[in-house]
Length: 542
Image (cartoon, rainbow, N blue to C red; front, side, top):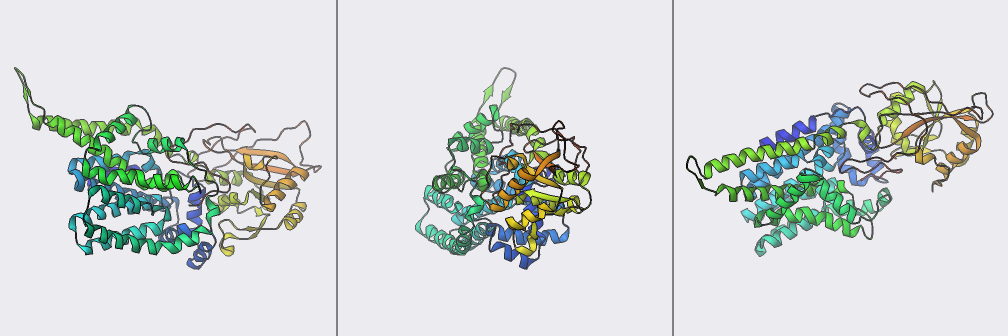
């Protein structure tokens, strides 16, 4: 356990201060700093599924509100999960399998990604791993009292995120495969039923907020393949195929497979099936199932090692017995884990760049610091873009949010309430220049947003303004959030017909590397790291 936790802690702390939050992290950051009554008011209309997490982070950020502190709970949770996976492996198949499973979990890129994100998914994974270990202990103990710690952990985990509920299905399948007696089923049923009753109010409230995941689509076979790659310590090549082979061998370990295989397959299977009717699936929602893959791979490796450990070789000059073979296999296992990690080192390094997340709000704020004059109006298209100003207010403190009617904390919303279309037109009519913060697709003139306020923004910009300057951070990998200066047609600042929009130099924020602005260009095709979805307008907040 200690080795697995040390490896995970080192990976989690490495590059933790990457110099920029992305959209969902910024939501955690700004919501957690509100008062408890303000958080409670928000949960009535949005993000009820994250309510417990926000309250927990409210206490954490009270100590010191910073990006590192924001991510530390996820690092600690991932470290605990690696230890719990190791303990589960020890209980099911012995110390070597436990050590291998814990280290495999720690070095998998998907684990490292969510260990460094200020969201609840690493904490949910820790809860599921702890509940699974308590399940096995309760089965072995056989007493009724052993089930209540299990029920408490399961309930807490499901309240932390309701899409952890499918783990109850995984545990039911595990009990069936283990062929436990009726009294075990009775104890588990009472504990699971109590947990389900506790989470029902959250499920009922969150159903009214289902629009937050309207951006999800029904998963196909491509998503199954992606999940398989994300759950592997290597998404391609010999590491991937070797892991699949060892998982197949691990299925021969009956007790381990009975627990690990349902954990690996049942939660993703349930969510993918339900999502054919009502999309609810995303890789990050089933991060906790990754523990099953690590256990199966380690069990397969352990079975191979035991088979080779029985080899005897007698030659003229050398006699090699079981002890020497087992020592050699131990060294080989350590080398294999080291090579696997080194093989994925470029992925880990890339994942620690702020520009490799869906959007870098620190970069947007840096652009604002360098370009905006005191009192300049700024318009966020759509309004979710205001997250940059909420996360990094220093960059926008000299600007005037021309569309904002009521702030996010006071209105009980994530990014504030804006003026109605008529009022917005009057406000824009009073200015000759306005800065716009947006992703390039949001400014597509062919786009017709369903929100009348957003349609008004695009209409007024197209009818009354023209682009004077555009600034984009060159370092971007995934998105092109831009800062664009619009000036009123016919004003002295308006460019002539022959003059193209200008690019300007940008400044820096502490911890943010500088990047030169780039000219307007078509949206690039980019690769994405394992387990990460592109930021969307409006984003999903689950």
